[in-house]
Amino acid sequence: MVGWECACVEGGRGRRRRRRRRRRRRRRRRRRRRRRRRRRRRRRRRRRRRRRRRRRRRRRRRRRGGVNEGNVDIRFI
Image (cartoon, rainbow, N blue to C red; front, side, top):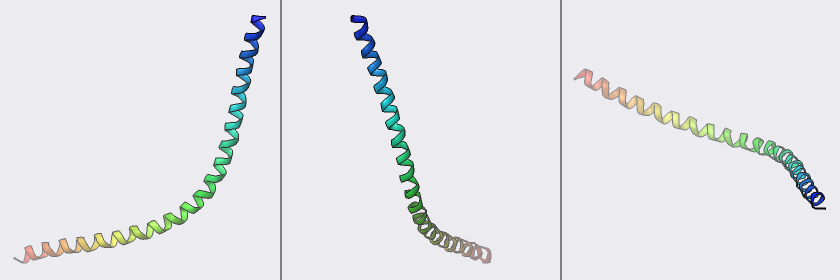
Protein backbone atom coordinates (compact mmCIF):
# COMPACT_ATOMS: atom_id res chain seq x y z
CA MET A 1 0.00 0.00 0.00
CA VAL A 2 2.92 2.34 0.62
CA GLY A 3 4.03 1.97 -3.03
CA TRP A 4 0.59 2.90 -4.31
CA GLU A 5 0.42 5.98 -2.10
CA CYS A 6 3.80 7.23 -3.39
CA ALA A 7 2.72 6.64 -6.99
CA CYS A 8 -0.50 8.61 -6.45
CA VAL A 9 1.37 11.52 -4.88
CA GLU A 10 3.95 11.63 -7.70
CA GLY A 11 1.22 11.38 -10.35
CA GLY A 12 -0.74 14.16 -8.66
CA ARG A 13 2.27 16.46 -8.67
CA GLY A 14 2.96 15.75 -12.35
CA ARG A 15 -0.61 16.55 -13.33
CA ARG A 16 -0.63 19.77 -11.33
CA ARG A 17 2.55 20.96 -13.05
CA ARG A 18 1.05 20.31 -16.48
CA ARG A 19 -2.09 22.25 -15.60
CA ARG A 20 -0.03 25.22 -14.43
CA ARG A 21 1.90 25.28 -17.72
CA ARG A 22 -1.33 25.33 -19.71
CA ARG A 23 -2.64 28.26 -17.67
CA ARG A 24 0.59 30.21 -18.25
CA ARG A 25 0.30 29.71 -22.02
CA ARG A 26 -3.23 31.10 -22.00
CA ARG A 27 -2.09 34.14 -20.00
CA ARG A 28 0.73 34.82 -22.47
CA ARG A 29 -1.71 34.87 -25.38
CA ARG A 30 -3.89 37.42 -23.58
CA ARG A 31 -0.85 39.58 -22.80
CA ARG A 32 0.20 39.60 -26.46
CA ARG A 33 -3.20 40.96 -27.48
CA ARG A 34 -2.95 43.72 -24.87
CA ARG A 35 0.59 44.62 -25.98
CA ARG A 36 -0.57 45.10 -29.58
CA ARG A 37 -3.14 47.64 -28.41
CA ARG A 38 -0.55 49.45 -26.29
CA ARG A 39 1.92 49.60 -29.20
CA ARG A 40 -0.58 51.58 -31.26
CA ARG A 41 -0.85 54.15 -28.47
CA ARG A 42 2.95 54.32 -28.09
CA ARG A 43 3.37 55.07 -31.82
CA ARG A 44 1.26 58.20 -31.40
CA ARG A 45 3.42 59.30 -28.47
CA ARG A 46 6.62 58.71 -30.47
CA ARG A 47 5.43 61.14 -33.15
CA ARG A 48 5.10 63.84 -30.50
CA ARG A 49 8.63 63.08 -29.22
CA ARG A 50 10.05 63.46 -32.75
CA ARG A 51 8.70 67.00 -32.91
CA ARG A 52 10.52 67.83 -29.68
CA ARG A 53 13.79 66.42 -31.08
CA ARG A 54 13.51 68.71 -34.12
CA ARG A 55 13.31 71.72 -31.82
CA ARG A 56 16.51 70.61 -30.07
CA ARG A 57 18.32 70.37 -33.42
CA ARG A 58 17.41 73.97 -34.23
CA ARG A 59 18.95 75.12 -30.96
CA ARG A 60 22.19 73.28 -31.77
CA ARG A 61 22.42 75.03 -35.15
CA ARG A 62 22.19 78.42 -33.45
CA ARG A 63 25.07 77.48 -31.13
CA ARG A 64 27.23 76.41 -34.08
CA GLY A 65 26.59 79.75 -35.79
CA GLY A 66 27.78 81.61 -32.68
CA VAL A 67 31.03 79.61 -32.60
CA ASN A 68 31.69 80.37 -36.29
CA GLU A 69 31.19 84.08 -35.71
CA GLY A 70 33.84 84.01 -32.96
CA ASN A 71 36.33 82.34 -35.30
CA VAL A 72 35.75 85.00 -37.98
CA ASP A 73 36.52 87.77 -35.46
CA ILE A 74 39.85 86.12 -34.61
CA ARG A 75 40.82 85.97 -38.30
CA PHE A 76 40.07 89.68 -38.80
CA ILE A 77 42.23 90.56 -35.80
